[in-house]
Length: 551
Image (cartoon, rainbow, N blue to C red; front, side, top):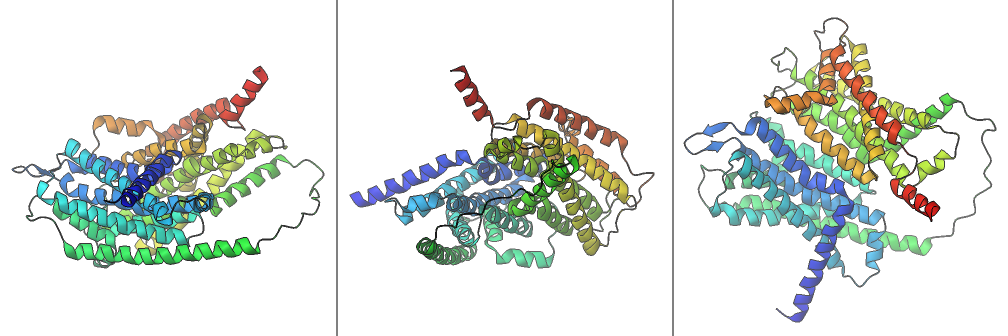
């Protein structure tokens, strides 16, 4: 290899390393790209994967679960990670600064694609390694080359598709929402989250149109102990590669359009006119009700402007209500306790949406305001802490109720499930659960130093609990220890209280006082931590100020 070629490879390697090091500043990326697939596989494997299908060959159900979750790891690490990272770099001005350096454009994009490939390989290796270590998943040397080639081709294709979306979407939040809004439904259509059911024909047809199902089938055949051969499937590879070429063309078009737009803006930019003198809108101090109402409106406005918050808290639960019962026999399937499958998931998804809003999104917004110094400026205004926090919690109530109404509407249209007879009890239960989640989310935000750390803690606790708290899985036979752990935390109490209140054959008032009592106890714990640790400023400014005073 020539010296120039070695220099280009060295430049590309350094850029890949730079992108991987930068991941430490965005823990949500690692959670979404590596943590999600591994967590889903480990938990689903623990619930259903240890069933032995072939005692003679030692084949367990996890042998057929691992390929799907390994594929899910690839697409999350390349498509979602790359798109969000690129959009974030553009929004923060990183790309603009890098374009002003001698770094070639091919090295800039190659570094991001290379980092995505490393993440995809890591996610796949972790899923397969966990399968081997925990569930006796069998790997075969004869299909290893085919798996590696398919993985590289798929990572390049999904990276190109991610860049194409990022080049055309306006903000990082919109990019995160759209990419996950595409990946998660297609994952259901591609049999990744299908355990024992049968996908409807129309879903299977849609799934074959996209590259993810082709990747899943290549991996599944490569790990199938009853199939022979090398594992190379050129027809599936051709479909994946065609999608990659299309994504690369759209990405190139979008990036060229973005450069032209930035150039036009820079040439036509004008100095803004000086603002007119501000005049106060009121002369008297606002009432307590006005202060709380202002915070409610502000919270709803912040959450509604964040596309990723809207997706994960409102759209995602509604989509799951539409998809999960459909791929498991339909919403009219009667469960062992007499509930309809559609009604059950309507209740649990309402709780999940409330948890995302109150435990993750609302506290994250407050922590980001604290990190930017917004809360410190508000502290100088006539806004007491109780009004600030009560307004934020009430805003979370409003979003949670909106999600519930949307879920009931979808359940009624798709499965003919009427509004619960004890609808008032269901509303009260949801408000109690949302208050509990908000208190605990604010407690987490008060304990951590930064908003990034807060969302890592919130997602890292919420998602595992969803699998053991009757949110995503019904009727699972948990190990005794895991069952006790699930009942210790409030999420399972919230789902059980909600399914009780929303039952069509409800008895009495519909209020599950034992579960509501557990939620109230956790609310008190959360409020105690908030009263102890809440601050208007971040930890670092407090420490710097103390150091200056001591000096």
